[in-house]
Length: 208
Image 1 (cartoon, helix red, strand yellow):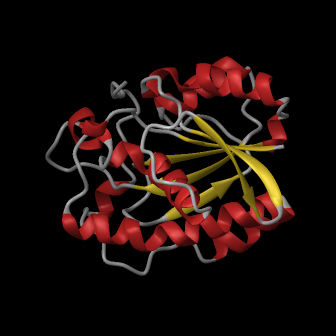
Image 2 (image 1 turned 180 degrees about the vertical axis):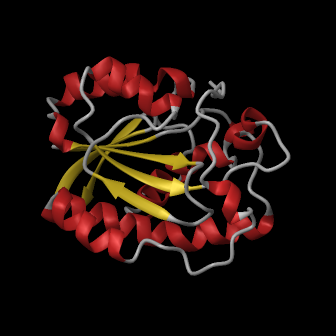
Image 3 (image 1 turned 120 degrees about the vertical axis):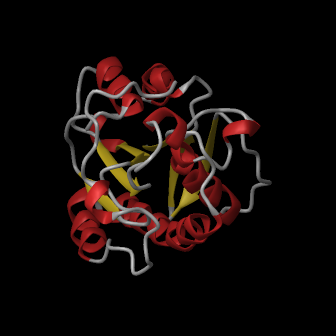
């Protein structure tokens, strides 16, 4: 069974923040499946492209996301190749997206926790760009809500993200990467200086 994890921080105060785009994607899948929206569900099984998948929104803080993922993998008998983690990425401009088959954490503490708990980094991940702060501390930036322009961009790309996940569920990671990464660039203007978007402070202290 495929397991899709959206990373974020639980709680109403974090619901629309940049760090919670992983939660936003899962909320869209839940809504499309006909479930009542519930921002704080822990896990649900839904049908996606003819297959049952498990959706996980860890209720731990971001830095401990791996604990919930490990429990889910054990509970549902998931294999590392059946796991997809959806998360924000400051190295990508607002609205840009990238799917990867495996890799390191890239400085993202939620992904780092998943790798640590599973003792393996060979799981798929789908990154959604949130841009890099220019005149703001990283911790403050990721916990700020999107501004109206950014929010519109994110709302407009989420259906494309969901389609990428659907392709992964149905046809596997290689086909999904080929299809998704070929058209992953956002066509929207970004609100962050593009020269700054790739200059991530690798030593920053990530929010919980």
